[in-house]
Length: 248
Image (cartoon, rainbow, N blue to C red):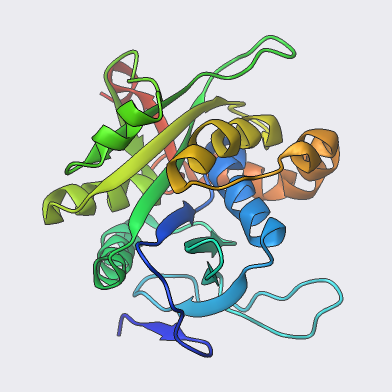
């Protein structure tokens, strides 16, 4: 049975922003979301038990506590919710997971920010391009924050694509934020651009991304195995944006 179970006290939130961190190409969404959870010392808020999610337990170095692979975190000070995920989602589970999470977001009246990478080869030191899409009336926020429109037709696949699709079906406001990233390796630099140029201005946050830039190589090494796993499972399970001509 699909459910999202609170772990402790109900949060006191006012028009919260929700940041989604399912793993995908370049791990940009996961790296960005994990950074927010650490940067703001966000509280473990709820466990996600949507049908089709992997039945595994996750534990951390130096900590005996086992938690489910998909979790929600909260910062009441920043009016922020974040989804952290440590495992790929099977294609047959995407619809159930998207419906489960979307229903919960509607109950909380949260503004979702769905994060995706666009595979691109960049010159060394070149800042990746970023653009935004949305459902309902949310695209107006992109205009206000001067986030670029897509340069060509495209699609978003994987869990993030399913979430955007469900938001559109429900007529619910949501934003999709897409950044160019490495097609092969974890890309902390692209995640920092996602945070600095999109998530922070949309959610009215001040986010220090210097640690992502300074420790990019360490982050790549720690996340390389998950990045390889996401490449192996293919585009249906892996969150990514791509030109429509390639998808067809």
